[in-house]
Length: 310
Image (cartoon, rainbow, N blue to C red):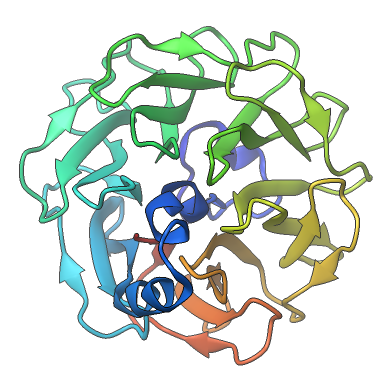
């Protein structure tokens, strides 16, 4: 069991995090339908794999779970990968600095050219990074200002800026819409965790969900019209979808174990997520309507944070 940063506030403390794959799919969405289908069939899934607690490596695999490749092999903990829209860079969380902090870093798609982008004091958490739709920005979480906020910076680490700047609540797990016009995130600003959207400048905050249970870790469908996220049900968390008004809610998983960390495929037809269904965290995939659920990883240790690549 691993606690990552301030995310251990969850009832499900095994680290529930959004892999915000839809944010990087704009190049595929602009292709003709046939091209998009062919590209989606070649898409891989990034994830992180527990080598030995607390050491996680960033890995990738084919959409059917085969062809697993290790991209980072540093003894430091490395997790939460997300790929740039052009498929050339991967951003993730690394603990390679002297303080052992969770810092945001990038590598090339083949695992080379490690570069640390944030450099914050000991005890600060920088987590859950993802690229903007055009690949020019990286959105991430940080508590460097004293509480958890959504931050944005240039893709090279310059011009770091607090986007939500909320002193009374925790804001986290943000993802840019496929066309970059909105950002979705979760926040406990109304007393429990709900889903919100805001403009890419941090203005015009809109509450999508409103209930007495936890909603968290949202990701976009490629259309930009629907969201997938996890909702707390009695006893566990399940994967659900909704539109941007919080209407037409569909529950996709129904079991007695926690399901989390959903990511949508480039063509919008499949969802990858993490489930505890075989006693440890494994990556699963299903159709976007919740049917044909299939386990993709069968490792003896945790596999987490699936993210579909362009």
